[in-house]
Length: 285
Length: 126
Ligand SMILES: C[S@@+](CC[C@H](N)C(=O)[O-])C[C@H]1O[C@@H](n2cnc3c(N)ncnc32)[C@H](O)[C@@H]1O
Image 1 (tube, rainbow over the protein chains, first blue to last red):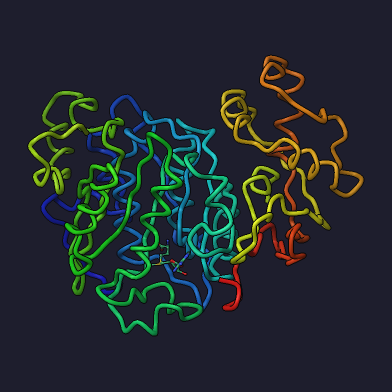
Image 2 (image 1 turned 120 degrees about the horizontal axis):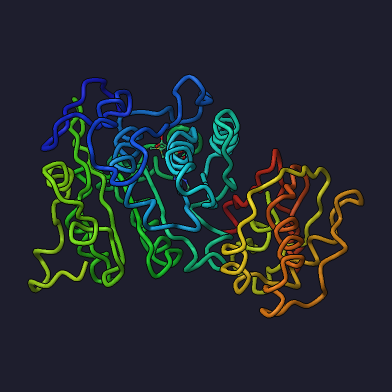
């Protein structure tokens, strides 16, 4: 969750948030406007005890940007971020969709009280709104909001650490993931499953050390397809963004999203079937 | 915190059975216009606990209290633009900035500060 030099692979590096103009030139957004904004770093609020936007935050926003046209077509009604930290990701999501999908309702949660306050400041600085709740994952919201959330985004605490660090307060909670970095991730997955609507999508940042294959297998058992939509190596981490969708519901995969031309195949380069090969040859996605 | 969120929140303390709806004690309320979207209102209507919603809307401090919502609502009302407008206003345009949510079973208070409800629990509550 640190380091500053990043190498995208296997895609080229045209998806960096700091260089969105490169991205905007690529023709992967279908009929939608090529330009879209994301949160501006100088407007993102910060606090000593709150996780600042970092490589993992950028990789998630870049994955969402790359999927922007599909998100717009998906027409989500409610989107949620779990673990919103500085608010960089949820603000970026709201900004990148606000023009073509202006009526989405956003929710954001964090277990850190400083983080929720910081997120609110960041949202306000960009003129967008999300309902922010201080809670453990989605505790208190989970039951009544079940089945209503169309898109969930999460950049969880994924760093393998001693178990004791997981329940720590403040900034430690932003990275401490316990054994294999899976302690919080494994608690988020069933909650996401409960919250997601029939056509729900989940985007999650994870590390190679978190055993993504096993995560996808587990979600597969609950009926989800999954793909790595973006991979990026920093000096110390191999980050991946995995997208999960309910099998049988449209995931905006190549067949449906195909727009022809070479640019299309380029954009699909980022979609590597991760779990599908484990299934018996059929992939309903 | 919008009344939409209030409608979705329940007491999350371990062992509590009747933790819904949370009683709203709003001290500071702000009104901010939101895009009117009839589709969303029709979609969410089925999932709104109307009694809890009307109760919360009426409980707001005087200048913001909503008196023009029917005690009971049924899907046929969604055909009325007038009804939708009132539903929209109460659900999405009123923001509780400061106050508390109180569990009907235990009296446990959850503070709302800067518009953010704090549902974090103490160790002995999880
Ligand atoms: C890696 S940081 C990501 C912050 C921000 N989303 C970003 O991408 O920059 C993880 C965030 O998850 C929060 N978090 C950790 N455990 C949580 C839990 N059980 N429930 C909700 N949020 C949690 C942390 O407080 C932290 O803000």
